[in-house]
Length: 379
Image (cartoon, rainbow, N blue to C red; front, side, top):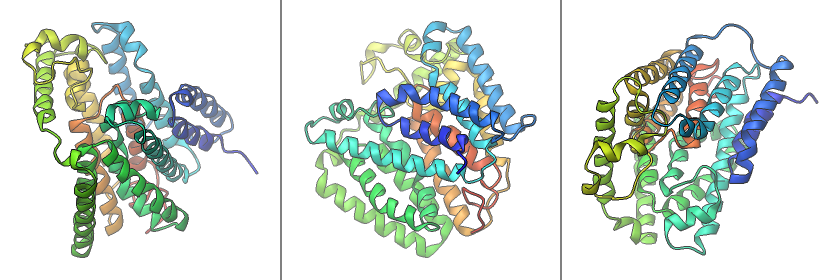
């Protein structure tokens, strides 16, 4: 049996994100296995297409902003996930084996299940969500809301489950685990992301699916009220804090409009750009809880234009899915991911870079958005 190094590279990197110790080995593994895949001819050769050019353009501007920002050494030290993004995106898009994107999605499902289990085990000995995160030892979970990354992929996993009984069985275990983890971490963001992704997918599927989605969400809501009073009574101060951080990001941008303050330097710049003492949350927050605003503040208008061009290329490279299930999957994932990027995601988070690479591959490689599947099969 021939070993497919491209598959080993991607699956190993995904599963390596389970713990902090394994995550330190994930990037070297991705680089070495990816190089072996290239040497074995498992990756498509040829000049970059417009999606890859857009990826490279954003990476170049990101590097330029880092080199000329407020703290180049800090930017470099915290930019390891961006390198993983580049390697992962190119391996996923150029792999000759079309099932690799599908397998990557399944590896992310396994990773989400492992993270959920880690959270649930840790929650038995800790009450505060922050303490649970610290005890869980999951590389992608730094704050409780980081668990929301997997909520936007539910439509994709459910669509895959319709095609494969093994995935369906995995989903019956993994998805409830995730839901319980959302509650254990008191992450309203994860629940909101899941609700929006489910609703968008249901609207694309038609009236019957809307009824099913509404019933499912109502059942989940009742369970949350019964099991998580702390979640239901959680204060709304975090909403005010977000608005203040968004205003701070705009203030930083006004001071550094062209190339920004450099990646990961928002935390260094915003206390001097606003009255930090008047903030609802007096703690220094390393990211503004909005990816577009973070890109604007840290890479300037040039970086935001490059990021916008990349998103445009990724969403228009292939024609939109015409079958109902494919359209529902696309709308569900796009809605959930967009919401997450607008109100939480950060360049500091490995899951942001990993999720972006995966979604770009899903949308743009052969068998991606062309027919609504994630592996090239017609529905």
